[in-house]
Image 1 (spheres, rainbow over the protein chains, first blue to last red):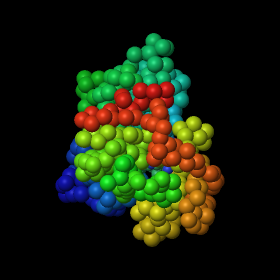
Image 2 (cartoon, rainbow over the protein chains, first blue to last red):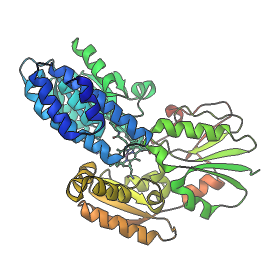
Image 3 (cartoon, each protein chain N blue to C red):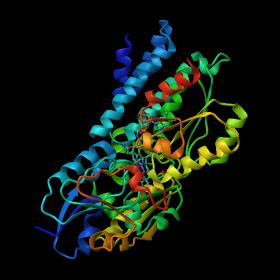
Image 4 (cartoon, protein in one colour):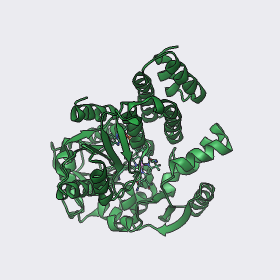
Length: 207
Length: 218
Ligand code: B12
């Protein structure tokens, strides 16, 4: 059984097959991180099919659910759950925005890559970000945003962190963010895909 | 050849046509393009590129999740409402929209007329995944929402469409409310005055997120 088969089953939304394959690959000694990568490839394909019009909204949710099921099996084997995780990342969808399908995928992939992730959910007020960073001392904060109307919220949240003397790196992620938005809101990185996010995290944690 | 050419989303078709002062030329693009800001941008650029003999192109779109970023005016200047998406256009202002809070999902008869909508997606989902799982998936999709607000704009048969929304909203445990739209913004788009609620892009220039949001709401 191959990782390609797992990516394909994920892309095809074959729930039972995905679960069976994850167990099988784990059993045959494949590293959890490799398994997560295969799932991620499947997810990217799901996104492409959605954009092409082959999948609909419910398939996006379905894909998220299948991924969650797979992660439940993988989690006990991931470094993020143990003491030797690579580091802590705080993440949430900013105030005013309640899109979270993309953020949830990013959370799972970061966990898959060995980070400890504190997920604050959606419509997160700046105070909550501040509090979470104080509590965890996280060197990286991820803010998800899909609504252009929420750029103000991004900016205010980052300003609130800085005003408290907190200096974690901030990565903003979503479908429309770019260099201009990043500069405007005062973030350190931007990501329009989950893998951009993983790359930035690797840089921040030197992992 | 019309003096003004309107390129707008099908979601707004009837509302715009009902205001049409005559002399405008119309292009309506599929609502389905919204699932991919990149595809929407491409379709918009193609439409813009095909228009040469017009005094001004009026875009019946918001920034739509970055879909307008990078659009280039060719020989004809563009005038674009300075807002995030068509919901503020249907409600008449950005403020009217904000008043509802983030836990609100908006629909109008124009949204329901498209190939994708809450009503169709619910039906499709239930037929594909069965009543229980299907309903659960849609609930999951809307898990952070509290209410569905149906915007009435005076479209033919819209009350019937509203009832369909009410049924689905009840099934997935969301409150259903109805509100009246306001055509002031759309009217202004068609006829001016094009004040600072609008972005002007002269020939050869490009739309950027910076230019778009340089005013108060940024
Ligand atoms: C699915 C969807 C919904 C679902 C959301 C379900 C949910 N639980 O999240 C539903 C149907 C409920 C919905 C509602 C609304 N939506 Co919507 N929605 C979308 C849609 C079609 C896809 C988004 C998505 O989930 N994509 C799949 C995921 C996997 O991709 P992603 O989100 O981009 O995430 C990836 C990257 O961006 C990145 N990423 C994302 N976050 C982060 C964070 C970090 C830290 C990192 C590193 C990376 C990262 O990694 C992810 C994985 O690769 C987009 C259009 C689009 N293609 O973007 C519109 C879109 C975002 N929605 C839009 C609108 C208008 C709305 C509504 C206002 C509509 C309404 N009628 O009321 C409401 C929003 C209300 C609110 N307050 O939030 C507009 C936004 C316009 C704007 N104002 O800016 C869009 C752009 C559609 C459009 N072109 O008009 N929506």
